[in-house]
Amino acid sequence: MIKISVVIPTFNRREHLKQLLIQLNEISGQNYCLEIIVVVDGSTDGTLELLKKEFDFVHIVEGDGNWWYTKSMNEGFNYSKRFNSKYTLLLNDDVILGLNYIENIVKAAESKNDSIVSSICFSHETPHLLFDAGVKEIKWWRFKFIKYLKQLGTANPKDYTGLYPTLAITGRGTLIPTNLLFTLNLYDEGFKQYGSDIELGFRASANSIKMFVSWDAQIFSIVNTTGKGASFIKSSFFDFIKSQFNPYSMNYLPDSFRIAWRYGIKLLFPLTCSIILLGNLKAYCFNKKY
Image (cartoon, rainbow, N blue to C red; front, side, top):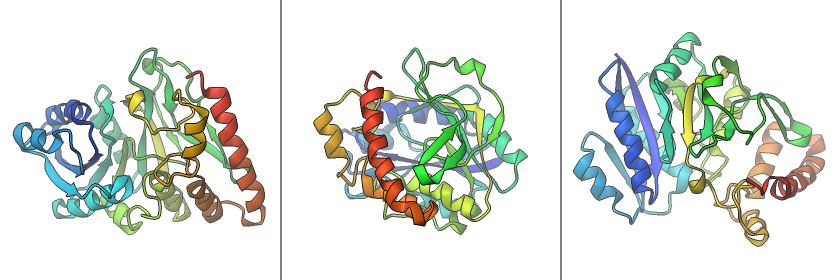
């Protein structure tokens, strides 16, 4: 039986978390031993009470409300060391697992020794939109991620299968050999809320660790819980602009600049920063219809 530590950060998403934990509990004990760690960072919606009453198999790590995503994940990772799990699975609290999800992502990982495997992601709402199917090329000078498939296009999950190399990962359904996670020294807490997951992937690549995306390991994300300021969420232009300077926003410019400096072409860094600025504005203007 393969042991997997599942780390889930949460903040005031009680009902979404409940759905996910029910799914995971149905899987655990079949062919996999899941040690589920939920990091509750200051939730006020009864999440703690729910976990203690209905999910006594869950390991709870309590934050003070100021941990945000990155520190919450790192605290969960450190808690998981006691389990000596072969793999660590990174999940968001607002996802629904697809059919045979754990089986499919573990199968992919077992076929690629010492590699990281991420998931294909769709919107939970229908018609399904494709969120992420992996990155096949990165043009660092323009901070351009060339994806296998068009992001936010309508998609039928049944049409997707296979395992493909990827140059970027997220924390929304990624399976990492636990020894590699700690070799990489976990997430960089300089990225408070967003960016730490994708930065970990770039750091892994820089250390010659291979990464793959499994189109058989499917997860479905609930759109209206996604970070405020995302271009596909209907928000005001003023809110979008504010998000560029909010360190807890997915659009926080210094996070993108930091990644571009570390992994991009330093000689072209000023040009890359200008392109990032223009790209964010373009994404807002042209994708707002979603």
